[in-house]
Image (cartoon, rainbow, N blue to C red; front, side, top):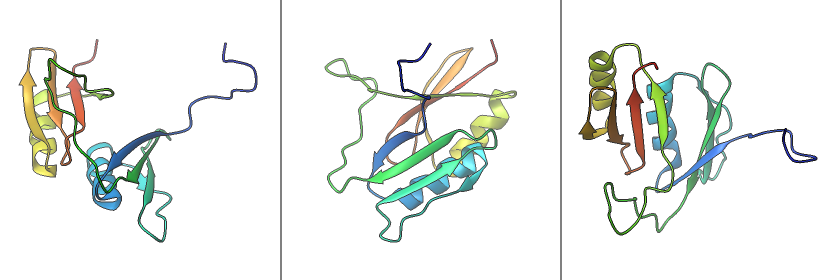
Length: 123
């Protein structure tokens, strides 16, 4: 049960140096549509085909997380379910992702500005 007055999670927001460019990367990765580009370009939101919402916020002094980093953490990452790991990997690499680590059940990538995400096989 959520805390009183809380309806649920609305958006996961990622800081980045270019919100529109990162929104296009995730739209290409997940499908969906851009739903709220701001006129000044400082905030762009998208929804995936299931209605989940990601937003991208301008951070002029953005520094990407390091992975792996024994002195710190990645702070947040997205797990993305795939039906065919090899096909999905080819697609994310073509979009501009970088492969960081691979195991039998998941693969770790960074998006074009360094946020970590994983492709994972169904449980």
